[in-house]
Each structure stands twice: as C-alpha cells, then as structure tokens.
Image (cartoon, rainbow, N blue to C red; front, side, top):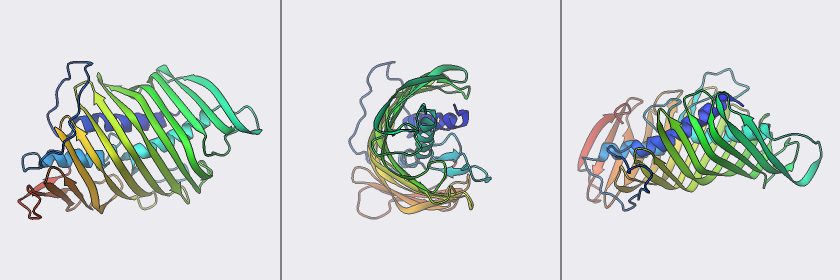
Length: 343
C-alpha cells in the first residue's frame, strides 16, 4: 500500500467533508446520530453573510483558503517522471486518479490471457497500523496492462489506519468509461465514473462521511502537463458536529504544469448546507490562476442566492474583493475587501 497515495486521498476527502460542513460559520450538533435535514431554498446574500458565502463556495469549488495538503485543492505528489517540487492540483480529482492507479496495481495478476470478462475476487491487505483494505474488480484484461471500458475496481476500507492521523471506512468504486495509453507511461487519457458509499474519515475524534458519485477525466501528454475535469450530479456530506450539506450539478476543470508550477481552475455548481441555511449557485467567470502553493492571483467567481449576488474578485495572491448586489438590480450595494487568509 502506498502510504503517500492513501494519505493524500484521506486528506482530500476529509477536507471535502469537514471543510464544506464547517464553512459559512455556525453549525451545531445534530444530537448525535439523528438525520440532519439540509435546507435547499436559495438564501439572500447580504453584507452580513457575504464573507461566509465566499468562504463556502470557494472551498467547495476547490479554491480553499489554505492551498496545501489539507485543502480540497492542495499539494499533490509530483509525477513520477518529474523531480519538481509538489504542486497545487485538483486534490480530490487528483486523488481519485491516484486511487485508480493504486487499485489497478493491487489487482492480482495471475495470467497473461485477455478474456472477455474476469471477475477478480476480493483481496485483502493490512493497512500500515491497523485495519484493512479489500480490493476487488471486474475487468477485461486480467493482467491489467490496459484499461477497458466497463472495467470496475472497488476498494473497501475497514477502519484503515496508515498512521497519518486519519482512519478510513467505507467503499470507493470506479468504472472505466474510456481509456487510451498507459497510466504509468504517458501519454494517457482516462475517464472513470466513481461512487463513494458511507465513506467515513475520522481525524482527532471527528468523523465526516460522504456519499455520492461523479465522473473524473484526466489526460496528460507527458506526465508534466495535466488537464482534469471532475463533475457529478450530487455529493452529500455529514459530520459528527452536525454539519451537513450537498454539492450538486458540479463541475471543476483544471490544468497543472509541473515544470512551471502554474495551475488553473474553473468551477460551477450548487451548494446547500446547514451552516449556510440554504443554497447558493456559483460559477467561475474568469479562470482562477496561480503558481505552486500560492493562492490564485487572478480569477472571478459569481455567487447567486435569492434575488441577490456577490462577485468575488481576486486582486492578487493575498487580497480579494466581494461586491454585493442585494436586490438583483445590477448595482453594487456594498464592496467588502478581504484576504485569502480571512476566508
């Protein structure tokens, strides 16, 4: 098992769960184990909640305030052929890609024969500290030297602890939709659908759980420049503090250059959460761009609530402005200067 790979995976998904659940301020216990009803009506955006809304939408769209390994958009390992320092990438999408490679490598390779369909029985390995990871598959090529549309890889984590501070339980399943090349010897292009089922991550006594599905597409001509698109109908999340929410109709597209360390991100979707008290729609209107582990230095996002909007404009890698239109008449009612660190 690759400790580095699973560590990135756990940090990314935990950030998605707990980061979205905590953004927007407030939030309280749901009474422990009770079902939390997430409000879905569009909320009004006002000067009072504008910073919280900005923090929430930037977080869920992978422009989180800490561009590091604890962010949804965070530090990912450099490609195998590169000696470059770690760069900023689409963390969750990148991690799903890493898990595809990981699950492929763990599938038993017992034959050189290519068959119409091969069901790979579950294979269980111990995690580094405690717990297990069980991998199974339904594949066309038992050697798994190639990916084939329809190939299915599933990983079941049972209290899996690799000593990185996070314990994982739940199921990650991936189905190959399209593939060309070689995942380990670029160029390659791959599209997979994925599902997360009761995927629970526990860190420092707090557990976040995520359910949902989506599609990941990634391509690279040289293992240096990557283009990734991560989209889905719905991802829902809960945590043990009572935080809960859903991100729906979402798309995140990014590029990453491991030579120049430059990255770009565009995103859109709808976020509904308990902490926001309802939902907002968000869309990138000017691509977010940045270098290495710095915050984006350019980019614009428009967030729409109930007959109100806010426009989040990146001034530089330190500062942003939030322009609020409370009644939807196209006139800015108030401008709030803020910083990435403040979000």
